[in-house]
Length: 90
Image (cartoon, rainbow, N blue to C red):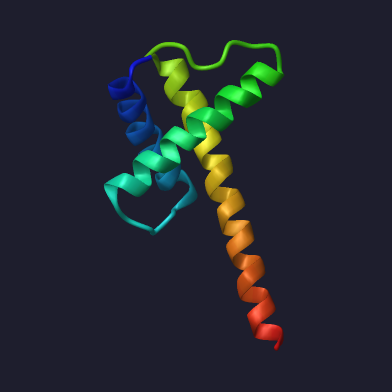
């Protein structure tokens, strides 16, 4: 895939993931970054399971990227809640 396709898949996957996880952060660059990182995570997980990663612009690629972005956002929320829990204990 070329860079424009990665950006489009990243934007769409990031929007879908932020809608599902109910992430309240805003910004187009943040959404694209979440989606592109999600595509890398989702593609790596698919490759680890012996399946094809993300190679072309398709609905499957979008869903794999969204799954990775959802996992990324959930991990970021978990890390953020750990930090808030520690500050309350002091």
